[in-house]
Image 1 (cartoon, rainbow, N blue to C red):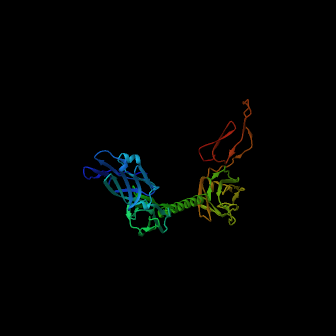
Image 2 (spheres, rainbow, N blue to C red):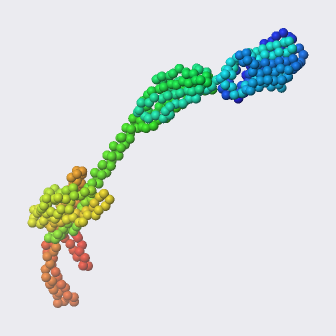
Image 3 (tube, one colour):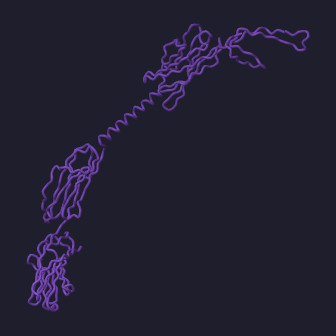
Length: 419
């Protein structure tokens, strides 16, 4: 890297002599870069004679490069161009500058008996190496963040902590400590307990930087709000799961009464479905009057009976269960001998209750009209002498509901009255 500052600053002697044309008195460069120390001159009157021209560059009085009698001598890291000198340019090139190259330089030009000189200062800068440790922090845990700046020069440096765009005060910032090579180290510490993902940065300002260096922290874990949301979501899911589980622990299909004929065994069927049906109790009602079963019910497969206003019994029959995933399905049939007095258009209700989950389900159905088979008389021949066909007659008595025959088929009338 070469640096040439060309602001003109001139010092002139008499009309006959050497005129020095040089730049500003300070040259700033980064360590390990290449830099040009500008120095230009002119001689008057007449033209330049290289045989009587001497150009010397000194650093605190020590010669580092020299042009004399048409030849250039210089230290390894310094370069003085003979071609440039012929054109009045005595600028010095220093390569890979280090800390010891900093300081005061003098460019001296002699021509015959005339001479001129210019001085300038070389200022070396070294930007800091900035680290923020740890790079990631755990939320809801006390943290010590260290923002360190290493190997910088010159000594002055500034740390600034920012959280969500606002300046905050660090816990501690140390003075710059000098290293053996002349550079400096410094650090700043910020202590906090993160409860949110605020944008937290350490900003370092130094002369060797074109713009401040910023380092940001990243976060691990969950904030208090996120933890609360997860807990609430988990509880909600658990409650929903328990609700679904509770709902499916026991269920009952609609009650289906089969054809009820007085004097014959009738039934009302349904299907009991659920989990651990051995913990399910059943109650049956006819017109809100509970049917008391013969035996104490121990599980849903128990069969019991008890009379209700008649010698007819009530029998609870269960078919073999069908096992499924997590649920069991058991057909249940209430068997009884129907009578018109007790059962016609009566409301039949079944209530099941799971003793563990306390879920209760009810189903109701209105029983249909109770059929009564007709009493048939003997067949009589009612043919007349004038009839060409034989006529037979059968009398039906005490039947229900009112029916008629057509082409050998029974048709139910709307009227519930018997004939």
